[in-house]
Length: 155
Image 1: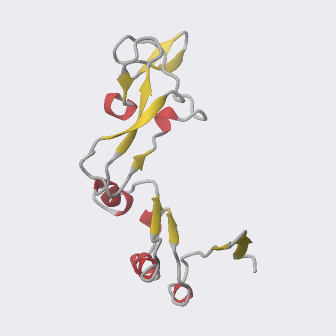
Image 2: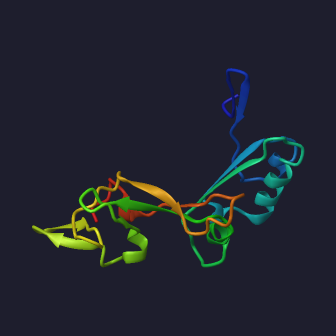
C-alpha cells in the first residue's frame, strides 16, 4: 500500500492523524508528531498508547509554537532545551541569536549580518554547536530551531 513501506528488515507505516479510529489497530515503535500544536489531543494520546508494548518507544515532536505552556512549548520546557550557539571564527566566542535578538543583527554595506556579540565579526550559521540550557535534564532532548540561523532567510 502507499502507506506501508519495507526497508530492509524494517517496516515503515505512514499514517495521518485525521481519525483516531485508524490509530487503534496499529502497534508502533516510533511516532513523529508534525505540527503538534495542531494535532487533536485524543489522537496524540492514542498514538502514545499504541507504543505501550514497544521496546523502542521513540517520539519526535515537531511544531511551530502557538501559545506559551501549550503543545510544543510545553514539551520543550520538559527537555534539556538545546539552542544552536554560533561560534565566532575570529574570537571563538559563542552567540545565541535568540538571546541577543535584535542586537545580534547589524547592518553592514546595506544588508544585515549575524554579528558576534563579543567582537562584532560576521557569524556563519553553519559554525556552531547545540548547547543545553538545562543540562540537568538527561532523559529528554529538545532542540529550538530559529529562522535567525537559517541559510534560506536573509536576516
